[in-house]
Length: 119
Image 1 (cartoon, helix red, strand yellow):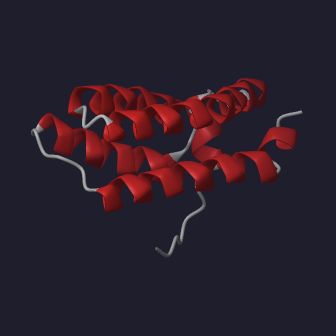
Image 2 (tube, rainbow, N blue to C red; image 1 turned 45 degrees about the vertical axis):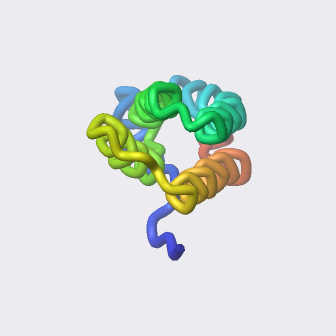
C-alpha cells in the first residue's frame, strides 16, 4: 500500500493543542507508549473473534489519534469503527493493514523530529 501523506500531521497536532508544542509533544509521547499495547489488544480481539472488544479498542485508539494529528491512522480507524458498528466483520487483510498503519505511525513518532521540535 502506497502512502502519500505522513502518518503524523504536525500542524494539525499543534492546532489541536492550541499551538502548545509541549502539550503536542506529551500527547505524541503518550500515543507512542500506547500504540504497542493497542496493537496487541487488537490482535487478541481479532484472534478471539470478538467484534465487541475489537470495536472497543478501535474506538479508544481512534480517540487518541484525534487528539494528536495521527490523521492517517485516525481515518482508517473511523472507517473500521463504522464497519464494526454495522455488525460487519473485519477481514484479516483489513486487520493487517491496520497493524501496518499502527507500526508506520509509531515509527514516524519515534524517528521524526516532532518530539524534539517541541523542546
